[in-house]
Amino acid sequence: MDIYNYLKKDHQKVADLMEQVIASKDPAERQSLFETIKMELTLHADTEEQTFYKAIEDATRSKQVEEKIEHANHEHDEIREYLEKLSTTPVTDELWLETFGEFKHSVTHHVEEEEGEIFEKAKKYLSSQEAKDLAKEMDALKKQSQVQSKVPADAMG
Ligand SMILES: [Fe+2]
Ligand SMILES: [Fe+2]
Image 1 (cartoon, rainbow, N blue to C red):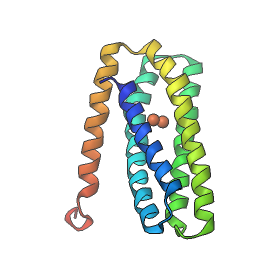
Image 2: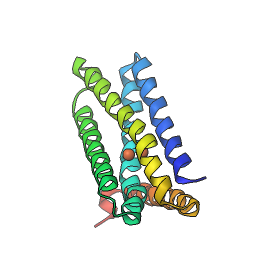
Image 3: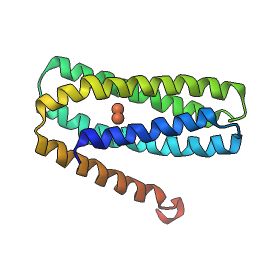
Image 4: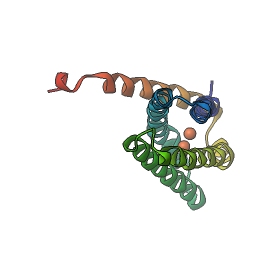
């Protein structure tokens, strides 16, 4: 698998989970689906920046490409802010679903741009071998971060 298919699979997973949140009538279920989305998306954005975006930046000196990556990073930050807002608003609050709608819109928009413009640039600058290596790298980084986040706080001191 190359990085493009790897990322698409992640995007699809989150898109499905977001649809399930919208369809759900049960606040507890909604909450638990949201927790999964938050975990998946945070891990995705963090490791995507550290592998895929970084590789594109390293491979080019194009101002136009740099600006696209910068824009994508801003969208990641916007998504992180929505995740924070949704975490601190009770899931039963009217505002929650409204905010979730905005969040979903923001994620969908970002994914469209990423799978469109960013993939197009990446394919121009990264070899197919690099694209395969990046999928492995991102996957390894995710697994590493998951292990770290599972270590209880009191075991760290
Ligand atoms: Fe992505
Ligand atoms: Fe992204």
